[in-house]
Image (cartoon, rainbow, N blue to C red; front, side, top):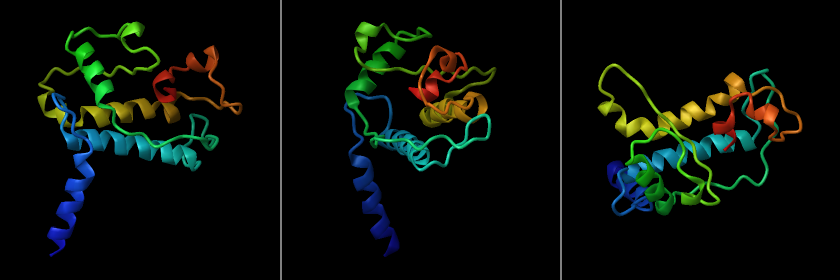
Length: 153
């Protein structure tokens, strides 16, 4: 009986993540969104520390993320060109972009299912590793020079 109750809940939770023609599965999309919303929630609730060991200021007006199939399609078109780097701004007007790459001497095929959440972990790891105390919480060139542009995106 428990399986019957849990299974429909999983189906309902994942069906909102279908993007026709997309390369990711609905479950992969859900995991990426859930992971990012968890990090953002931790930031809003003052649970994350920076490189100095100081708790970050609580976030404000940080809305919950939702998956956008159009953004996925745009990112996939760029990824299909196999060009390492950011896409031209005119292709993503008003939208930020993070690039993630994984190099290995062995096959990375097995990492396909976790690449999205691996990227999220990598970007958010900039906070405790690189982000120095910034009481005003303003993005300046000095802050950008710390190598935290992915985390702050």
